[in-house]
Amino acid sequence: MGASRAFDDKVGAYIVGETLIRLAKSRRKLAARVVSVGTTQEEIGVRGATTATYSVNPHIAIAVDVGHATDHPDCDNRKYGETKLGGGPILCRGANINPKVFDRLLKAAQKLGIPYQLEADPRPTGTDARAIQVGRAGVATGLVSIPLRYMHTPSEMVDLEDVERCVQLLVEFAASLEKGDYAHW
Ligand SMILES: [Zn+2]
Figure (cartoon, rainbow, N blue to C red):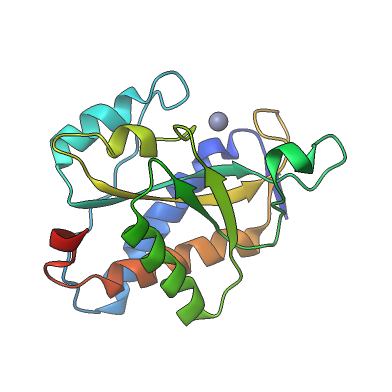
């Protein structure tokens, strides 16, 4: 376990940076150009994601953010679902999420044999995914969330195993992309 202020979303930035390092070191031949972006102002109107999507103009994108771990007594699981520290990356489904991107993330997790958790978000997500999806002419967007307890407090907590699994998942997802995938997404 790790505890820190502002894991939201420092831990997401770490995961994305580590993913790029591992992709570069692996020497796997990638069909896609992989670009990372550290966005500003996510919490107050997803403005950084809006301008970054315009600038990068991606075919496919994954937002990496933290997600509420609901495994503490203060949280009503009937309202917020069941997600826990140590349960692996949270894969989101919902209106902002392209189903084929979701499927590919799911397959990547299954191929790696890592645990994962599912989250339903029928309204706009509280993440950059909601801006990226409707950027430019539209982007096939997915969302990977790191389970995090006590969000927006000075003692946010994550499980470092979950962090590692998120890196592995994103590496596998990037490596799984084939030329022309996005044309059908
Ligand atoms: Zn937040």
